[in-house]
Length: 276
Length: 302
Image (cartoon, rainbow over all chains, first blue to last red; front, side):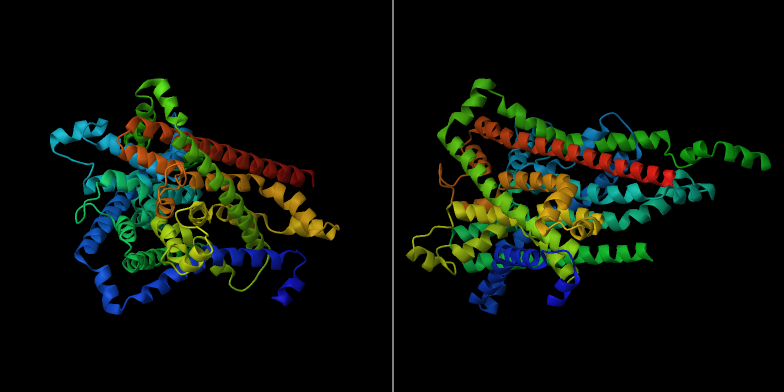
């Protein structure tokens, strides 16, 4: 460390690295580490039964099923939205572009109550959908709606910059070689966008499995049917079942970190491919 | 063939555009699809907040803010943001300075660790502090003995908020400062400026819009956080309820109109954040264009 400090003319290495590392450790790393250590209170069999009880397994099914469905739905929709925003000019394009970030900026609780009002029996959409037999609020479909809202910006915002950087010459070459416009899009443009679509999908999925605020209002929270895992963690905490709550949290953390790692690998590959 | 080639070179610009232009039907289909998606999933939820809030008229709308519990919630939310945002701003500046101005071992690890809180469920962000400071937590008994309350009190809410808003400023600054390099700082230092002078008069003016944007995002999330705060707050009315928690309580009491009235406050904050974001991006684009123009002029004069 000393050698590096001497070599650089710019001051503040010790101060900035020291502060950043201390703050990171105190706020993030130590509390997360403590969570992993806390599960040592449980024996292996206790841990296993805590994370595989019927109610917990049902909550995984709801959480991961709805998150996957929402992220999958956001893939084509986000791609379409990014395409329209980058390639076409239409009235209100800038407003739509700004609005895409709404799910990032709007507090999740507000999204939750607003979606619930829309899709409940007396709501604007509920009134239309229930007569034809589709119940959204207080069913897994409601959870899917909330998670689609929450995940909406991810695919758009990962695809948009890539689409902007895409060189028109490649598409021209394809057109010159006799490909129709649709062939060019399907076989030249889309393959180039796939890594960013995949990254956006994974980010949306990762965000969705941990989501709480927007879901709890619309889901109805019925154990075994519409109870998501984050809510189950809170329920266990409120019943003072700390060790069980922690065991569930550790399972969620491991999955989240694995997804994060996956994104980094995809992006690393992408950068290497662009570099060479 | 020769004829076609000569016309091609003539109207090269025009034909290039046409050859990679999408057919009209496809354009309309995609624009229509994208706009319906946006209307269904973004505009409708947004509109409902305001129509529900104003359902019983302006006087009922304003009455929702007269309630002492609502006022206490607004005060608490402001207090939490005033503590959490500057803390994460200082961290963002320090981390970005370290990562972009120096080379050291573990730099990439540090950069990825900063993103960690985004991968953690807000519920777990609350839980980790309950495990540390709660009555049954590691330091629970010690804190009890000394009569310090963190969980179900304001410090816990601040901690949980700091956790979930941790990456915002750093994430904005790191790519920005990376692209700017360190030549300007080196020049200032060579000319005899002190470290602080260099930071204040060279670095800060260069990154002010990015910093501003990071702080806005951080603030929006700090004021709107629900899951993490819900775990550590204990929901004591008038004492540990933030604005989002107050929205939840009103909603669960079937006081729907008041709930949306308070929620509309947070929605306006969100919309303001989006407007400021658009403004900052516009400023950034303009400054890039200006820099490009200056460069071209310099090249031209040589």
